Image (cartoon, rainbow, N blue to C red):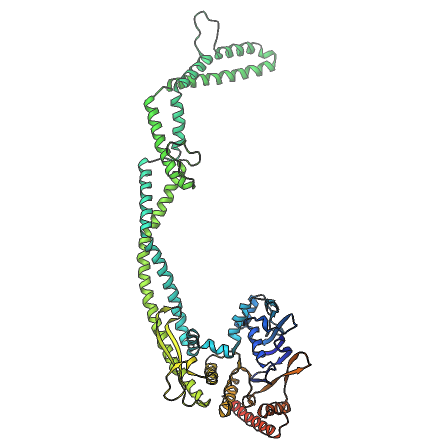
Length: 593
């Protein structure tokens, strides 16, 4: 509940502090003193529109700060803590504030932390219900009427609504996925055909990993077979060739053998020469091995044009695969026909693409099974959504009958004995997130009058009383901690005014009620009475708020009754009003009404 509100530089209010209490608080004052600014300030504090025109002339900004008592483990406390704010005192006091500059810039704070204005609006849903003429207009909207009925219906409807929304959102997601899959059937079929063609081409070629590298090396050898044969023959003859008749030249092996023999003959006389002789022996062995391998190589090297043609043809086939599929795996553009062999991708990239294509083809083939499964789920969900929507409609119709009967009974006590309120629950064009119902509150204000939508079936004063009756009924179903009413008694007088006061007092047994009123019959029922006072210094009007004691209440009610604070008749009537209201409040407390 609200404990204290401070308003600074808002409209005619220069600086005012409202000390609020549990129960029913009435706010009164002369016309133009700024009573409505109290409600405006509360609306601003809880995220209402920041109008720079409301900033007091000469001030830089208007500010409204409130102190609320909340439960430390409540939803509101959790939201403030998540936003980085803190609770004061023992963890149950929350400070919120809102300011608007003369230039229109707005700032919001909760728990000492700067927060988005939207957070204050969100917190307000669990903290306060502000009702002025503009707020009454909100309930005239069909969407708000449906929300109000659901709130009145209670936990049974909320449980079904939660089940419905889970099924509705799942059905919507499944339907969207199913539409996407079926809508892309042609594209998926074309993609699958292309993948199958590619895989078939690769499978027919049967490439092996590393085959392109081995073929390149073989082609190089075959293309240069004559040169390789000549070089190997020359090298072999140089290392280990047969001497010509009468030639003094010797091959390398013979030369090394002669050198080794010369050194070994004297090796016993010098260890250095002995070591060199050993190294020459090793060299002779190595040269002999190389010569033998060269002899074998010469025998193996042969020009084979047919094999060369086959290798070149195979390499061309692999190159086509690399151009067509290797670049798909690497993300490179396809090389045009006749261009040089690509340097980037190789046969390994082709095989990688084949693996990716196989996996993707399995996914595409699996989409058919997915479509079948989704279609079955969609059909089941559609039936569930329809069934839950029917249950919602039934619960709403039952709640609508109870709600209409209770509000009509309240209207009888609010001097509208012949008024009849109904709440129609009709079928909407299609199911939505909240079911398939449209809700319309209608009012027949007089016997024989047609039942019209709420905004058209009631005058301004009647609408205020209807709104009060609705809030009294709502409060018993799902009360917020604080109700604020402005002009709830507009167009009301006499016995109806007394009934308005009595209803507000009853509502105050369930929640904190703050009412801006001009009727003494209403103010008399208040537990706390605040008066907005204005003082004119000749140049500018300043308003403040005072809390009245018993004598002050008598004087203020006398002014409201007779227009004169010292009227003997007015004071006597005010005393009667206070006494009667006090007796009724005491009765309400005893009965727990």
